Length: 336
Image 1 (tube, rainbow, N blue to C red):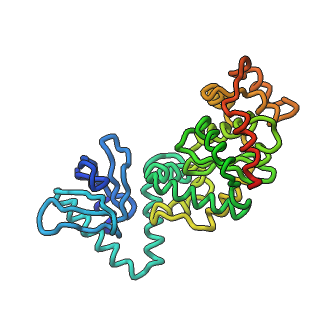
Image 2: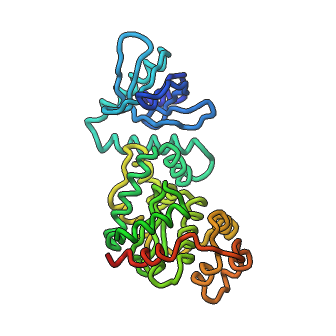
Image 3: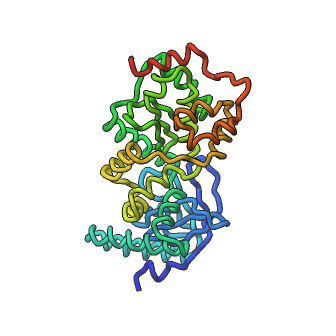
C-alpha cells in the first residue's frame, strides 16, 4: 500500500487564506491525485495543491501552516495531528520518487485519472475536462487565452489595429459584450468568427468591410457569445486536447504549445455550428439588435434561418447603437 493509498479517504478541517489580504476560511482538506484538494462545505473544489510542491511554513507545534509553492502567499493551517502526519508521509514518498522523473510523471497522471474517475459514473474525458475547468484560476484562463490568440495570429496574421478603428471596435465590444471581453478583427479567410478562452472573440475583417452597417458583424459576435454560454471555451479546449493532456494540465498546470496550436487551427478550420436560436435571440433582444440582417448573411436562401427573421426581437423602430462615423472608422481598422 502506497502512502497515498493509505490516506486517500482521510479528511480534516483547515483554515485557508487565498491571498495575503484575505480572511481565513474554513475548508475541508482531502487527498487527491498526488495533491491536496481544498473544498467548501458543499464539496465544491476551491483549490488544488500539488503535494510535491507544498511547503511547510511552521514546524514543531500545531497548527502547521502550509503554502502551495514558492512565491505564493496562499496558506493553509491544519491542527489535525493525523492529517499533518499523513501530509508529511505522502510528501516524503513523492520526493523520494523524484529521482525517477519519468516514473513520477506517469504515476501522477495515473493517480489523477483514478481520482477523477471517482467523481462520476460517466466517461473520464468529460469528467476530467469539467474538473480542470472548475479548479482553474481566472488568471490561468486569461493566460491560456492570450497564448491561443498568439497561435491564431501565427496562422492569420496579427489582429487589425488602427487608432480610430480600435476606438470604434471598443464601442462595439462595450455594446455587445461588455468591457470584460476582448474583441478583435482578424483576416480569417472563410471563417466568419470564433472565440477563445479568456473572453476573447474574433470576427473576420470581411464582416466590417463588406457590409453597410454593423448588424451582421454584431450578429456573429453574439453567436460566439451564445456558443460560449452553451459550452465554456476552456472546456472546449480540454475536450479537444484529450484526456491525457488534460490530466497533464492537472498535474503541472501547463498545456503544451503543440496542443495549443492544434486547438487554434481547429478554431479557424472547424465547421460552423449554430447555437440554439432561442438563446441567440435572447442576446439580440438584450442588446437591442435586429437579427434579420444576420439571418440573411448566414444563409442567403433563408432555408435554415427563417426562424431568426420571424422571431426578430427588433423588427420595428430599430436604431443602430453604433453611429455612422464609428462604423466608417471600424471599416478601416485593417487599413492602418
